[in-house]
Amino acid sequence: MSVSVQSLHLADAREADDLTAFLARLLHYDRAAAVRVQAGEPGGRPQPHLAVFGRPPSFEVLAVRTARLGSPVALDTTVSAGELLDCIDGSGFTLPAPVTGPPWAGVLPPRGGWSELPGLPGVAEMRAVVAAAVAEFRRRDEQLPPEHRTRAERDRIGREIWSRELPGVRLPLRAVHAAHSLGFLRPGAPVALLAAPGSWLRLRTPFGSVALRTGGPGGPGLGALGLTPTRSG
Image 1: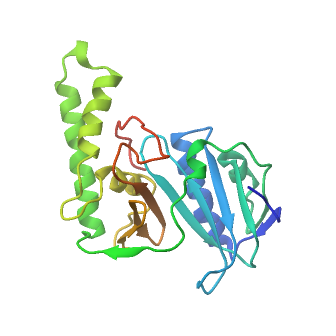
Image 2: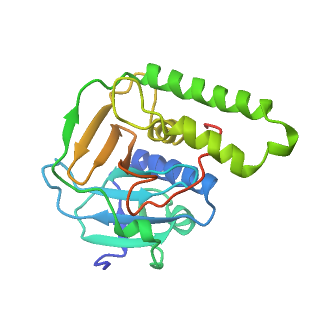
């Protein structure tokens, strides 16, 4: 990966606030999180954007947050999420030094070729499904005999629950859980489910997206992770 610019200028303070909130949520799940940061030509957008990719370890998805830039830059690098968060102070900031990227950083969703799939429920229904799934997990966990209340057994229950598909669409519940936990599923927000070649799915909202590859645990390049539910913030 190469970086042709070290200083970035976001469009306004709101963009900085949204980006810092996203990074803080990633760090909540992984204090050593790394993020891949990209920017380039607007590509049909009215304004240049920065895209920040992360993978919270409690979910088998990639999380994506975009921010509007004040001016176009060419950028593709992987940095520490914590160091990037520390660097953001207002709308202008300097990128931290690059780090060796984790394997997932080399397998990002495609930039184009997405088409919208029908049947996605609204935000309120998706949040209700996540709440019911979390309640089921807690109930089944409480019913386990003490000798079976192990991380392996909890992961087994979690994998069973979060591998189910959202009613009416082929989106695994773990993607909806991730979007809710990362603050993307806000009441009244428009949402869309998109598909792209390579078995990619993306749950898109104005506040961020989650993407995953179907066809196996976590999809190729994402790896298999435990699926113990996390508390939504």
